[in-house]
Length: 185
Image (cartoon, rainbow, N blue to C red; front, side, top):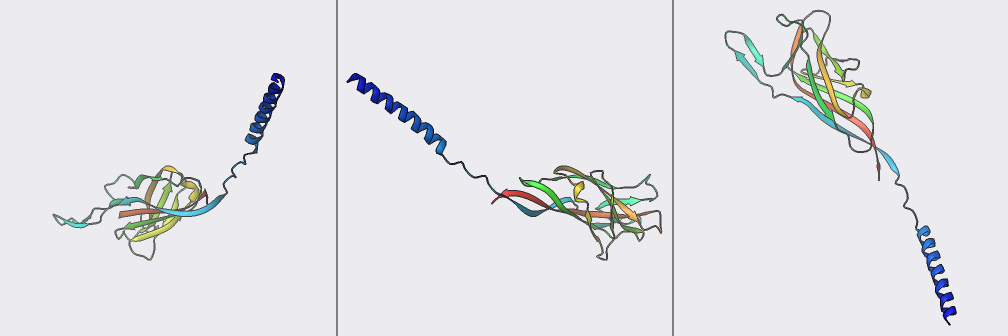
């Protein structure tokens, strides 16, 4: 009887071990998520100065609280550009920048000013021509020049060639970035 019991116990142990191993291997694996491309956009406020105009004493005229951007004006050794930093923080799954638009709100510039020259992260400058919309300039930048994380923007005045000097005051610089990202839906 001991021998029969031992044989039965061994057979049960073999069946149990084989069954557990088989059961472990039989669990279905979870399917991989399907990633889909999505497009979204974000507005980045780079500069926002509340505009005001005041009259200076001693007949010096009107003064502005905007950021002065000029070139060739007497008393200034060289171009006065607006240089600033900003951050672009896309959502998880970011793959590429599709387009970059820049809007600049300014105080009526000098007659020789014909838009801005914009340099993004030290790359080749892009000219944003003046527009018929007074006090607003809008244009596109190269999306490949923008990077996720810290960025720099250098904005200088573009002269029309009729003069060697000109200037304006900048109140707002806003960037709109359209980009693609991948996520499981």
